[in-house]
Image 1: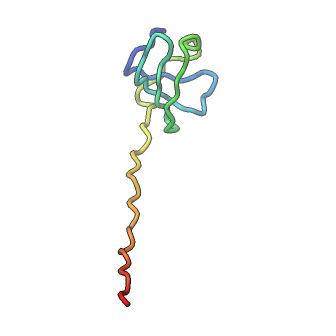
Image 2: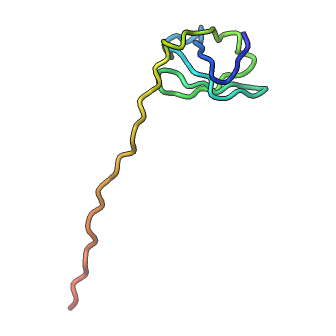
Image 3: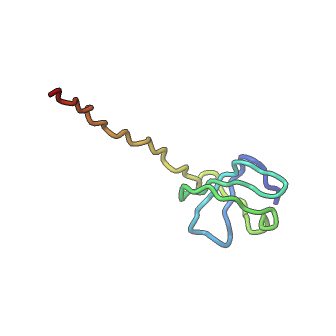
Length: 80
């Protein structure tokens, strides 16, 4: 199987990760975002463990918006 950017794969040794979308491919590794929300780097020597997957099985993790903390009002010093 040829690993290219944008294809969907599953890792035969870690099915709990779910389906993944290939984000980047270099000569030595591929970066894949899996359904569990974690980006993993798979070495080129382990590409044989990747199997083609159905695009419909991929559910991108929900975008988490950063939590905005309320800032306390600054204290004013008392003049003596």
